[in-house]
Image 1: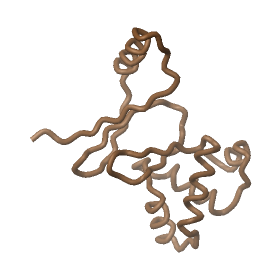
Image 2: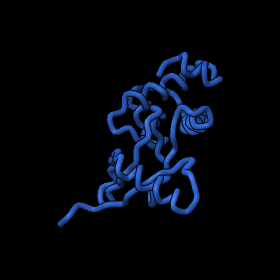
Image 3: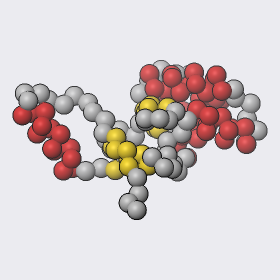
Image 4: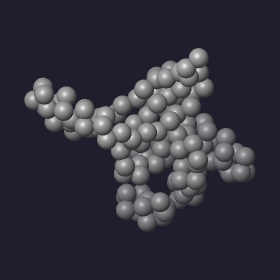
Length: 133
C-alpha cells in the first residue's frame, strides 16, 4: 500500500498515516495492537501519540484499509486488508495468531448456510487452540 491508497480511501496523506500504514505493511506478524505500533514508533524516535494511532487506525478501518479483530481475552489487533479471505487460530498459551485458509471449511460453511435457506454474506472463523501435550 502507498500514498495513493490513502488518497483513494479519501484520506489526506499525513506523516502519522504514512508511518502507521508502513508499519502495518512491513510487520511480519501481521496482527498489531495500537500499543505495538506505538512502541515501534517510539523505538524509531517518532513523536506520534497513542491517541493519534487509535484515531488513524479507526480511520483506516472505516476506509477499508485495515481489519480489526477482537480475539477472546485479548486486545484489538489490526491487519492490512489485503482482499483475501483467511481464518485465524489463536494459541491460548502464547497469544500467537495463526492465519489459515481451507477451501473445505469454506465449502462446508456455505453448505450449512444453504441447508438452512441462507447465503453467507460475511463471516469470521476463529479457532482457540493449545498445543497437544
